[in-house]
Image 1 (cartoon, each protein chain N blue to C red):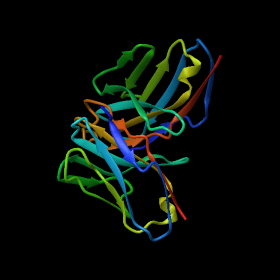
Image 2 (image 1 turned 60 degrees about the horizontal axis):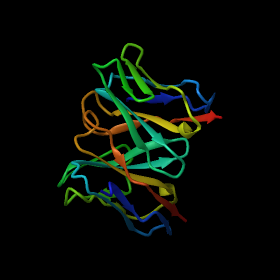
Image 3 (image 1 turned 180 degrees about the horizontal axis):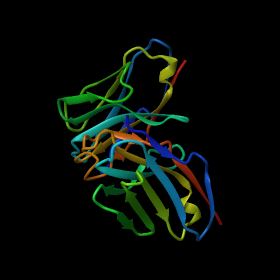
Image 4 (image 1 turned 90 degrees about the vertical axis):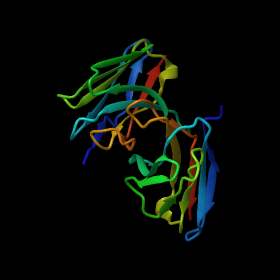
Length: 114
Length: 114
């Protein structure tokens, strides 16, 4: 049981490049979320999904796209990387949202945009 | 909008003592509140969840209280150990229901000295 797997663990991008951060979970969880964590800002929600085919914006969605074609996978796409997107990105999943269970987090992707 | 406040100053205590961390929220009462532990370079790990109709929840050496009148949750670690040293985050739903969209506090760093 791998839990939530994020790849890559580290990435350096040049301004304007695009990339996809991968997230996969093997727990059959319906809810999945992407957060970014910056010093002094805490974790901020980027996008989230309550099931395959259903996504919604979080607090800081600009510059990011998501899709959820399967229950297992929830990739995060950076359309045109900017230095302001330098951050640590976490993917998380939960069976039913926050009222019943906590979220299981991945180990994170540390992204640097130069 | 809902905001969460956690003491940004590190909490330093002696091994064996009880650590008490505070989480205050500013607006509506959430349907639930969660506590997570985060170690440096790692993703948050879910510890406890308490619902709006519960005043107290326990798990081994951990205890969480939820006071909707004070708009506050307290997180206690009894008989603290150096291995408890970490940053502790509280989180709640962005609405008064269960959307699964979490807001996180910035976290309080706990240092337990032997």
